[in-house]
Image (tube, rainbow over all chains, first blue to last red; front, side, top):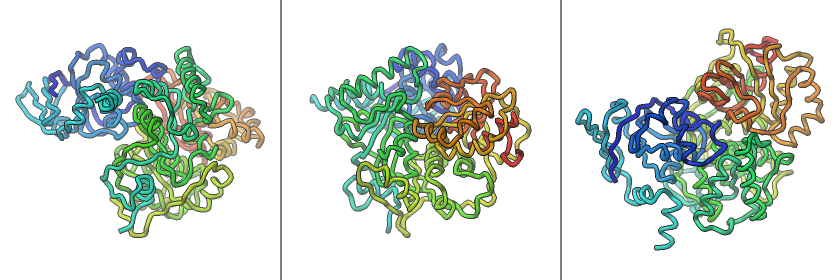
Length: 164
Length: 419
């Protein structure tokens, strides 16, 4: 699986309240959540982001609450992938369960700036910064997890396996 | 080579003699839970997967606690979904307003989560039950849906960090101060993916309420779980409440730890974590004059009876500062009743504090005490992230009930010593 998109850079310890503030948790409708994605980190993000764009962040992305609304909001906002130096553990699990691919790369997190074009290959874990012709490495996403992402998350993946 | 308490509980639930950090295991789950924010998605996934039955209806609790009493029409619809699901599946542990409490205070109180259990909850503060000597961790709604169907889940066995608390507690220093201090030392990702094991003579002397407070905030250091070995204090707490059998596990003397960190609590004074991170903890005496608009005493972190008694001790015969709103939120109906019976409500009312029905409400910026732009609160809650209690330009300072009560009286962040 490959994605190409523009990078949006965020700092360290972006918590789930910044990703989707609790004041919007009276719904789990992806479209509504998407309108407030990253609102307390960058109030205009939901208006600026284009389909396929990539969030790049420093360490401990997604810390805080267990709300699955966080990866739902990011995915529904059109973000194709999140790259961070590291992820908080509940968010990591939730992201794959929602079919939102995420990659850990300290190199990319340290170097990429907002606006750069990135090309990401989940199978190899190679991230190409097309704006500056640089390459960063991340752990490849294993085939079964690529399938999980392609299928839209854990539940569709499990259902497909049951019906096969 | 021995095992830690976390490894022993996980091994027992995986049907293995031994597990090691990094190992991927599948475990049986003793108890699971979700609330009015996370259960609607879990229920949707449960139905989407075509499931018809919960693996064991006696082993799940659904607790509407975040946006209740219903704060708006959308929240009411989310609670309605929970209620209808609970009725459809005849769930014995569904707690309606008037019977409910904040989930992480309610479940230990009701004896539903016990020492030696594996507990997963669709709420990050599920780690609270580590205070009872259980392995308890937060998961997302989809993972919870899978547990509802199968009664099982998978984990990577976490490495453990051992914290040894030695010395003598100074006046007004509580479990809340110890955990804020610890997070301040190691950072918000200092225990990421790890088990935090709290040990030492100081922990052995802590009451159950304070142990639950400490385990509650393990997630704030990124931990998978926080845990305290069960002892006589634990036994006294659970034996009158337990509705099923339980087991005490202890770490072996030769258990392996990734790190061992010792703190001398004699050097720790009451702590305040400055916004926007629980790791920004500072000794209260080091702070300049910081005027406040609101105080919140409650939450799954500090809404238990001992917390209310501590606040009452300081508010007795005093008044909340004229420009400050002081909100007191007993965490469960039983705590509410007990506080009333003990006369604490008279003290709070005479101090001109407001007393609320149990709710998570303001802690996550839901309702019942939202901050306007520029407003500042001292709260006994667990997170002070940007916008956590309301407007993104409002601020939350985390502290113990003692510091919160003293601050309410003085109208600025204050040490109880100042009263």
